[in-house]
Amino acid sequence: MSDLPNITESNRWYERALGLIPAGTQTLAKGAGQYVNGVAPKFAARGRGSHVWDVDGNEFVDLQMGIGPLSLGYCYEPVDRAIREQLALGITFSLVHPLEVEVAELVRSVVPNAEMVRYSKTGCDVTSAAVRLARAHTGRNKVLACGYHGWHDWYVAVTDRNLGVPEPVRELSYTFDYNDLEGLERSLDADTACVILEPVVFTPPKNDFLQEVRKLCDARGALLVFDEMWTGFRLALGGAQEKFGVRADLACFSKACANGMPLSLLTGRRDVMRLLEKDVFFFTTFGGEALSLAAARATIEELRRKDVVGHITRQGKRLRDGYNALAGELGMKYTGAAGFECRSIVTFDASAGNPLELKSLLQQEMIRRGVLWGGFHNVSFSHTDADVEAVLGAYREALPVLKAAVEGGRVLETLRGKPVEPVFRKTSQFNTKPVPFEKRG
Figure 1 (cartoon, rainbow, N blue to C red):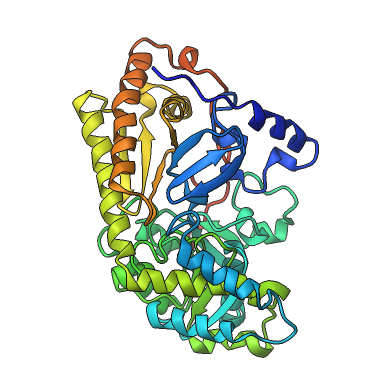
Figure 2 (tube, rainbow, N blue to C red):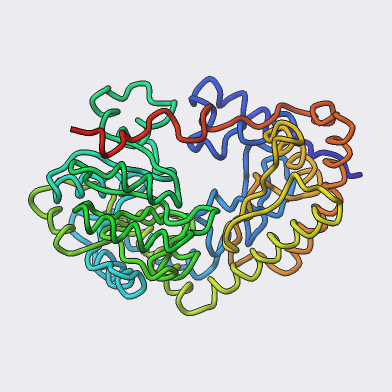
């Protein structure tokens, strides 16, 4: 068995960070709480292709890929070259830059129903703008949400981390279950401005769920908003609208569209988007920042020119199905990989123990074997056949360790650090539910 990596330098940086940075991170999914503290590296130094090196010099096959944005891979030369060329010309200007038009035209050419495009920097910027637009267009107030949509007040109001969100705001946002059309129908009342959802996460739509949501929104006069942070440019080049043939009134993108540069996209119907011209305010100094737009142009051109989606699909399928085959061979019925090929998740049944502790032990053993693993298969164009074989080889050695610990009741004793932490203390249905339609005044 190989040794766990030396993380001395990571821990030094972490100690420096804790006195300065709340939680020691800007992105919760990258923070120490999402890795086995005491075992996993905490700070990265560089990346290339599908590999990352931490500050102690340890090398890993990366299955996190920046928590999604690196659709092509680290240091992908066509994108980096576009950034360097634009850097020599300037970053942020006092006038609109032609890249703003060029990238919008490119987005329109690949994303269905992208009649108009607005840029920002983070995913929650554009989901919040979509909610504001929906309220302005419909004259209504309430939001029905399904999935994760960021940290802004309208969404985080439905979570258990909503301290600081005024009560009147909390009363305007509600959640519904994926594939529960009946529940959505009961909840969607005359004051619902929009239904916003991740079109898929890991569970596929059943009984034409997305098509039926579209029909329901049309019948009730609410806008349909797709949060395509994960599905955009990965599930299909044009995202879930292309994959499932369903039109959203507004669709929001980030992550994969610029291969790691900070950019988000709000796209949608012309009549709705034109409210941003005079009636709805959504402008930002860095919306037209040229390095990110140059990266987006290069990224989308690569995605369109090469079979990136096909490659991600093939490699992701090998990882998902390979994990399931190995777990099946070992008789480990309490764990499996689920989801779409482009992004799958490894899950654990509570019947075998605390799922976070099981995940933590498998993460520890994957890190021991040179794989940076957070429970997901986030695949990029740079993940090679050799990378996939290395990951499957690590699973082949790590899963028996997990099995032995479960069967011996020694999961915690086998861990060499603190288990990973939940992002939300309550992770299902959060703390608000829609009031049934028939009970509303």
